[in-house]
Each structure stands twice: as C-alpha cells, then as structure tokens.
Image (cartoon, rainbow over all chains, first blue to last red; front, side, top):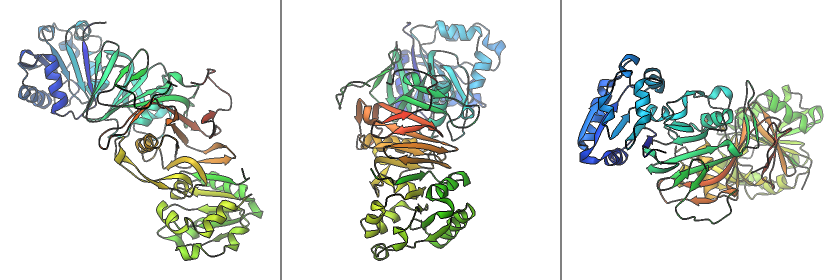
Length: 261
Length: 261
C-alpha cells in the first residue's frame, strides 16, 4: 500500500473540503496540478480551480491540459513533482477515453506521497468500476450503465451528487449486478479521504455504503425489477470511517452497543 | 390474527393489481366500498374507482362519503357487509383526521374476511407510523415528518411512489429515527398483499424493505446528516414474500445459497 491518498468528492465542494485538499498537498509548499479533461470547457474549469486553490493558500497551482491521448502519452514532468492532483467534473468517460492506459495513467498510479483528488465526474473515474449514467427510477438492469474506471480505488463503485440527485436506485442496481464491488454514494460537498485500507468521511453531507456482499439472494432479470435481499446499508456522516477490505464501518464511539449483524 | 387481508398499493395501480383486488373481494359476488376521504375531489375519485371496479367485474361497488368526523361516527351498514374496502389517494392526513378514532375506524379494525386496500395516501395511512411528508434530499432528522397511521399494519412505516419519487432518503431517515419500525417503500403499480404475518409482492415494480433493527450505530443530530450503520436492505420484485415478525425475506427458490447475515 503506497502512501498515496485519495480525496474523492461528490461534487459542489465548499472551501472546507478544497482547503483540506490544499493542506494535504502541503499548503504553501503545495504543487498542485489541475486536470480538467472531463470538462467540456477546460479553460474555464482550470481557471476556476487555479484561483480557488491559490486563494486557499496553495503555493503553486498549474493546469495540465490533456485533450487527447497523444498529449496523455507524453512525459509529464509537472505530474512527477506534484504534491496534489485534482480532477474536475464533467464527463467521466472523457477521462477514461483520453487518459486510460496512457503513460500519464501509469504515472498517476506510480505516484507516492501525492494526494489525488477528484470531484463529481473526477470522483466517478477514480473507482474500479465507474458509473457512467443511469437515471431510471426503478432498480433494474437498465437503471445503470457502468464501465471500467481508472482504478485508483479498486473494488468500489463510486456514485456522486448522491443524495441531491436521488441516485440510490442506480447504486443498488449496480451492486446487484456486481456484488463484489462495494457501492459508495457520495453527497455533494462531501468526500472520502483514503488512508490505506480505510476511508474517512469529510464534509457537510453523508456517504452511503451499499454492500451486497452479504446478500442472500440476487435476481437480475433481463427486464423488470431486480430482487436483492440481505444487502447492508451504512449512512456515514463526517468523522466516521469505513474499512474497505473488512467491509465494516468504523464509528468513533458507538451510541448503540450491539453485536454486528 | 384475523383473516382480514390488506392490499397496500404504491400508487398508479394498473388493471392487474386492481383486478386482483376485485378477485380477492369476491369478483361478481364482491361488495366493494370506496372511501375517497383522502382526495380533494372525492366525487371524481369515487366515480373513477366505481367505474374501474365495475369494469373489472365487481358485483357491487359503492362509495362511502366520509367528509367529517360526524359522518365517520355514524353506523356504517355498508361497511359491515363489505367484502372489500378501497382507500383512494390524496392526503393521508385527511384520512387520519376524519376517520382516526371514530366508530368507522373501530369497525374497520373489527372486519374479518374483508380485504382492505389503499393506494398512495390510502397506503400510507394503513401503516402503524405514517410518513406524512418530506422531500429533502439528504438523510437528516428534517428529511421526513411522520405521524401515527390507522395501524391496519402495525410495526411498519409505509412509503409509496417509492422509486418514482426517489424516496429512499426519507425512508432511511424515518427508520433511523424509529428503528423498531420496518420501512416499506412501495413502487407505483406495485403492492404488498398481507397474509397473517407475511406479505407477498405483486405488480410491476419492487418493494424495498429497510430494516434498521440490525443497525449497529445510529446517530441523529438535531441538524446535519444522520449516521446509520449496519442496516439491512431488501429489494423484492413480484412473487417474493417477506416475513414481518421475523424481518426476513422469503424468496421462492434461492438463486444464491448462503447463510442469512
């Protein structure tokens, strides 16, 4: 396990979360690289986050424009010396389409001591399996479309803008299809910060963890509603943590003492 | 346990579900009473369901207009001989405000051999604790407002139009507040049909059961996000059942054999 940390934000981050990113990257000593590949207006997104991170006291903030795979296959000295990398929102498939499998992708995986952050689409792309789209209301095979993510955090499916866009149905659909993947639904202005095999919840909302690993029965018909019994759900506010491999919440001091189910 | 059966519909019922109600009530021998107290246009709702149930082959269909508590405290010979009672949608608090605690309420609880059905608000009012309103997106104390229901089905919180209106957050909020109540989220054109201590799922959608009984930790701050860990969630499509007292799904033939968590 490298000392690389991930800060995965559910969108619409306020100064508290973005300031935490700057601090993790080193504050006045930070060298932050903004990657706006997901955005359809990368110049605007780059300018926005450069200004925000500088206002929050980051020493050095630069944008790395990766508009195509050719650019993503060049050497990236900026990234090699970065202490923080930030993926903006937009379309998560632009990230995987442009960066996936390139030398930049490899370099990002090799970085140690760097905090890699992503918000919205930038968060979705960091998971092992990425939720691409899906806004059907029911819990069905058609309710969600997934694809491989960049796998900074393998073994999980990340959804974002979670409470705000009422996305639990697509996360339930996804874990019914892939029960080996842990479903993480991250609210806006909320994030998970990884530390090895654990993550901590930060921000003003909650992280909903859907664990179909314990499910006793899963039926996914070609059409119509999914059946999924015995799944576990955890809603975690800021300050609480989760152990990924153990698939268990770590709550600071249990208010209700009871044997875990 | 009486032989009374409950058909609790999540709204927008198609002819399949309404036909099942007519059949349960006796088909050509049925004596159905429609109660449109929840509706702000009771005449229209009464006319609609009288026509629908007659078209579906019900022998006798009548409306019982209960507009105030005075009417609800009169003797109800129509109800005494009913084989089926149907509560329309509208505002669930109108049902409890007009009928709750009246002689009609008592009579409805004493009926045996009668199927009592409700759709939408009529479904919400049948539960022990009724979800009155709540459309906040997060999982917080303020996300849901509840009140006592008519308690045809005690021990449960019923939410309706469940998938269609993305209501899992308010159901999760409600069971975090009241973990002794089982949360039932019923989709549109979907119903539960009770049979003693069990219910079966009918219709085109699913019933989502949220069980906070197994929760290991529940924190409900005055403001901000709730923390709820170790809750169980079951998504049940038509044909599957649930044992209420045992809080366990009964799936017809397990596709995945595993010890229940």
